[in-house]
Length: 128
Length: 107
Image 1 (cartoon, rainbow over the protein chains, first blue to last red):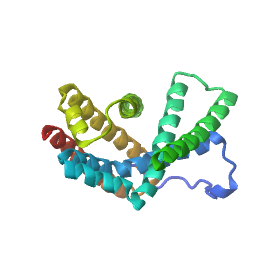
Image 2: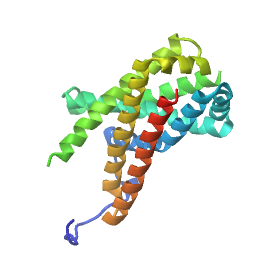
Image 3: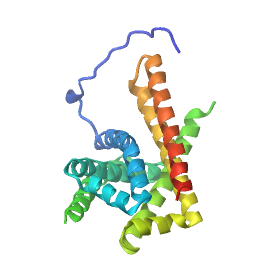
């Protein structure tokens, strides 16, 4: 743990900085990860409940299908899809696939849009 | 110390297992028997499934720990606050680990 470091210029007016798509994808990956982490206790609880008894299973269903949960679920579905798809893009980058600027830019857009589209598809299927 | 390298590797390892398991669950949900209490119990009664599920829980918790740790390192200052928060989260995640074992043992 260092002592007080040298004063360096700081610029954190994020709204004034133009971010590449890969940066947007990256912060989305971080935010979605955080949201998924926060939802872990919920999944544990719902799984425990569903496994406990027939009544427990139906209670778990009630919880999942409640209006409040439906909204949270929409966010979590996006979180899972974005984190998963962006994660795959990172794995490919790790083995040097798509590292060049153009492909990286394109894949960042593709993943971001794919995450949103599949989220809508899942939610549409869920609601039906 | 190669803690950065270890963290990088563990995130890939756990991430891949989590992704594979989720795909497995998806395929199961789409092609298997309708999801019901009985179906759930029958699935978990299989010892291999129980082990794979516990691996899944472990992978999730470890992946979450490193992920949140990275966020804490970037944004939580001073160090004492970060240590406090990560300790609380660590205890919470350990609690989930114990809970997972209890759930599976109670099947």
